[in-house]
Image (cartoon, rainbow, N blue to C red):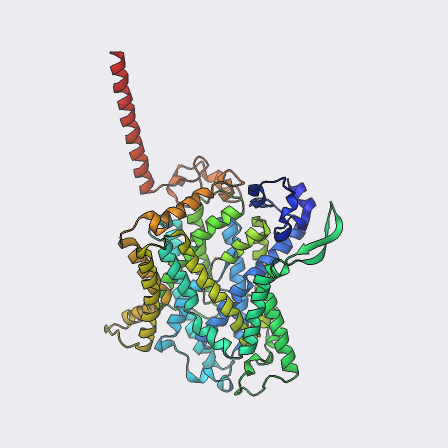
Length: 613
């Protein structure tokens, strides 16, 4: 099997979308949709490297956006060197968490990276009156990045954010490893997920607007280029030389616009900014419009950055905890967990694996919780979650091998240790970032709304639940931010908790959607719950027939299968029945089936006696 795949090399990739008819009617539509490489397959080494780099580039835009947005709340707008260190740290932690997830977590080819679900409550916390940046930090001429005063200003905020993320991550660890995630997902449907995810994108409009307004021409160019590459040119191939045992040296089609549209858009716009800078077309006076589009604004950050850096826990000091921050981050973690469960099922279907059993889902959520704990300890200012963009990439490449994702994790680890790489990303001109944010946040908003496709949107009930949740989540936080002193209970900590929760759009919309969806009468079909269950059942039509793909590595499952206590551990697989684990609902269900069977048996006996006599 492996030798046949190796002979076709790069030609097997499904990014060669327009030539998918190469099967010449031999294969059915179902066969063509099957992955070329399944979860346990190992592609040729050169293909592994190429696809691993592709996954890294796919996640690139989402990962670097988080520290660059977070820098505003941390008072780091004018400290590009520290921004570069944050970029290195988040890449390093993302690589580490990817290795943990693929090896010990859900064991699917799913990449881990930063999450916008935690960015929203973090920005809400940092916008509180006690955490607002001093006025002098907004003026580049007054900021001395090596000053102990300035360092204490941003590190105090970072340490509080770190501690809040670490404490909040314990909720995800508990929900995951205890098996509670299955119970919670009974009450979280599309009408809860849709407003929650949509409001992540909508709540970041101000950050995107500020960067767009720094130079509308450059921002518009970046946006147009990304749209051009990702939508209009995505099916246009670029001929590249390739080699395979069957065809030797030949020309193959490479869909570069489909694989890396964001990176290409940034690079082209960046190059234009560079040319406009060296020819002094852009103003050199910081007070003039368009100055932030210059490529020399960030100074000598690339020269100052070290070649090698090694992120480590506590690099910004001992983390502290804010009770208000913990509650805000918890709201984001709940949203992240619900998204990840959906990603697991989608990833399993695209990689040819059977639907993930309960123990694998529990383990995956638990490992994501550990990832958030590590992210907090290392000081990314964010957590980790499954990257939906990379799950979609599996459907494009038709390569679902987890070896590729493991290698991608290693690449992210290495990139996180190259200080110059982080420094280069930190020098991206502000309007270029604005153009990228316009695309990314719009897609996040639309992705949230797309969850409604499984619900009955002709129902007045559903229209009310979604519309009320969305509009309230825009109105309430906006009013609270303008009237921060409205809630005064006399207890400072309680006031902070209320303010953070009510100024987090995602929490307000998600909570209202959750409450209304579970209390307003409606059928499961109307709420979209039956459609979700149907999708999960259809996922069972997989290339790999058994659930052994979800077993723990290094023979751990074989050793544990002989232990009787394993059935009481929700995240441990069992050889005799991999998909089941000890829980009260499963015990009650089994008991009811036994009683029903005994009743039927007794009835059959009575019928038999009647026939005999």
